[in-house]
Length: 141
Image 1 (tube, helix red, strand yellow):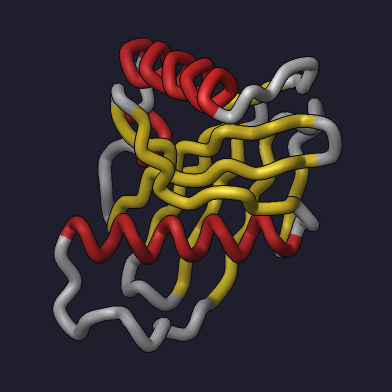
Image 2 (cartoon, helix red, strand yellow):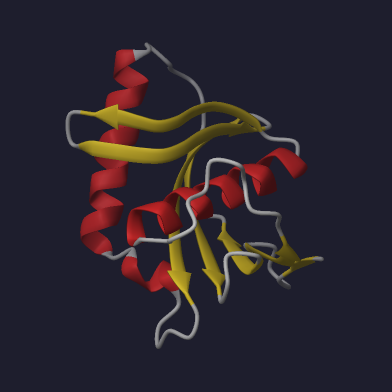
């Protein structure tokens, strides 16, 4: 089920996902992050976005997902946490991470000679108690 906030900047989806074939039986932090990115990718595809890169590596780090949302080139940071947790996962994207994402977006645009394209940075937070059920929050800047 997809709900949109009153100002349209946050999408919330709760759902159930089958475990992907590549997912291990024991779930470590790295595997949980991969699973969260997989859930976010499925979410963006449902929205009709064109995914152009996953885990793109630049000189300053990595961008989880890069996609087109209409005319916008969107750089997406995905944060995943297991429930119960005191803070939502998206709270881990602070000013330093935002600066890093800005630098990575600029590097991507320069490397692939993209100009005159509006750019946006989104954050997706995924929470799960059991890697089957999830709550996804998508913050659009």
